[in-house]
Image (cartoon, rainbow, N blue to C red; front, top):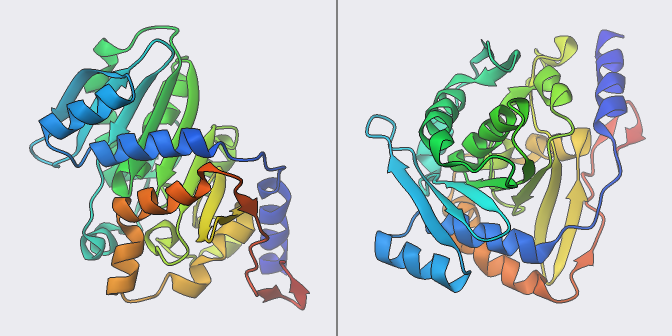
Length: 286
């Protein structure tokens, strides 16, 4: 009975209407996320092509977290580097959640610590009132989400958060508190990083499991994509969350893979229904 009640509560507050994704904006943020992996010259060329100016760039020696702030006339964007090493991602994703005193929610402490460092470093360079977006790939996406939480709580004009292959950062309660965060999570079907840490049956009855927020855009290929959120999005983890990282998973997680797939969606993308093929107590979630 407790398990049934928990699942009902999860479904109630995790369901909301989707809006059609802006694939032009998604591609722009993908190029900025990819820019975090480039050398200085290549990054400046990338920014020039998009008519953006590099405002500030930093790498933290201890954590090797790197980010840059760029701007144009309309918006300022913080892009944070992730990692292309899928095995390292899987090994570094522990299940420990600790309360963040500022946000008053439980967070993955490694991501939260990195987000606080980025926030402290970038804050002097932000223009008050000018819209801000954050973006990142992999672990960089996780940091971008928590950074966005800090920005929103402190009253900055947070317009959008777009991440690629982002793992989970908080639990059900934390996701519920920031349910209105303007977050779009872009994933590929075989990328297992967005599915970790996986759902734990031992934790579901007290709703303390890691949980995603925001809309999830699944790049299916052949100009087709699916939109999910809440419990339907999370239950994808039951298929891949326990998988041993493979070459296929690694390729699916690479930022260059995301960029290549997004090129398909710049003209007449077609939305399809994502099917989990999962039943709970005899009821299909599709």
